Length: 149
Image 1: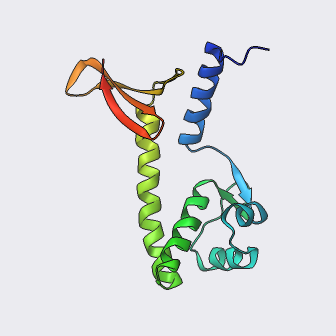
Image 2: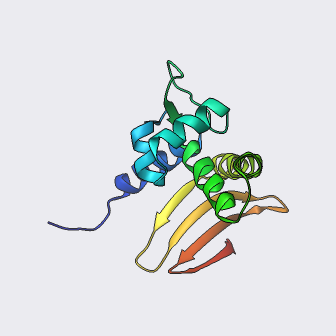
């Protein structure tokens, strides 16, 4: 069987990425969050009771959006730097908001994702200062750069 990607596969992946970037309805329970973040379930329940992480979903009880993973990792990061839980949660909320803005910006600009053997090309649409050109973010291995075309 041929392992080459078909154009339809790339389109499906592009739609998948757009779904993740917008307010998708991927919900995780406490056990999944604990497994992903390596924070004990009892600690996550405590953080939820204190309002440091927020439940969402249909019944808003022990269901968390994927954004909660970022919030939890950020709280852990600041606690490991010596901050108290409440200060770590405040700092995490600030950075979580920044993360949401990055997602929103990428969602609004993302037009297409192209994959070649050498690189991944993320089409970010028209280049505002010169709308006759497109802005692409290219990723080759560990190197990322912009191209105008």
